[in-house]
Length: 565
Image (tube, rainbow, N blue to C red; front, side, top):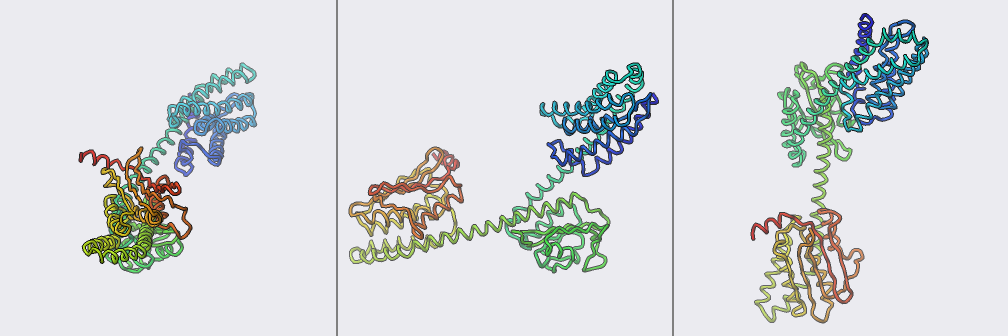
């Protein structure tokens, strides 16, 4: 009984060491996932030291050592698998063998086996898809109990003389089995509790991050300004409960919320050395209030005691900062420090996205202007020539054509949006076709075969006009006989197909800078809907040219159509 009490005392020493280990950054290695080589090496060293310390703390008994060596070997196998368990068990076993005694060899073998037992339990639980169970205290207790029973059996089998081995086992079996099993269970209990605390903190951090992101990203999409910064600062302070939040650009404070707001004002220049360091050195700056105090450059009695300043970046360029402040009477929590750094990264990505969307919008506008510039000159010239010819014969028709021409150009000038409905696009080309029909007379026939369900289909603006123009200008205009153009829109196997076909068959692959309109149509569709969509051209020389555009089918169009019917 005395021996068991003394072994439990030794176990308590190891548990204290284990407690310190559970509070250290090394706990990050005990995540339950697959360990990297560096992590395995670190755990090998730690658990080998546990086992060797257990041997040195042991008690001499009848020419042997009663000890708590098994805890390190079994736990190494449980946490890291058979290789780590065997490695720690072999190391601790060789160390025990070097100390001598009639059980030296059998204890060296048994310690190696104990590490293997822990590893086999690890494999069993992982194959049953229960890897988290390795951290259950009862599993550690049961595994160590079995391992220690195996150790006693090995001592009886291998140690000589046999009578001495039997006498030794009678004395040490129960104390060592109990002390090692309880010690392993206590170690795992501490590890599991520490992991639960970290999980709870991580969940709290993630929940807070998602909440702030959800409330602020929509604000930031409106741009980086004093107004949006003020809204964001209020939300960040509300969610983090820090003393104050400031958001700056490169030269001045855009928003300040919290303690010290009586002298830290929006519109003030950035004057604190911490903000300047973050801006000009592009790094996180932290004054924790202990090693370095925040000293307000404006007033002496400022209540702020610590600050975290994180730079906001766009394309590696610092455009501003987010600063979190705490009062002199409060610690700056690590979770708020990590949160502030993560928040700045999130906002930097959002600012980059906003800049990308702005540039994309400018590109779309440039492309639309390019298409308009390509259409207007030669079409206007041809339209005016046609109206001049018609006015001599039919003034009424001439007035109608002038109205169509006015409508066409008015619509062109007003088309600033990127997306329109198919119905709007058809109406736009209607004015164009009326003028072209007057120009070609009975030589031009246009047929429209449009599924009414698709009239509300959203398509990029100026999708059809360049295709119709090509069909007439490079197709039927060169025919002496009747020229025909078909415009179709229909559904096919989950897609929408829009076709423009002519009966000339004069299509040739364009050479720069020809064919710009069709290339822009194809590129814009691919950018919006994906590379599997867009424009294809098939030509049978002197018979037909078929331009086909493939769009994704919007199920809402079909649903709305069914409801209307």
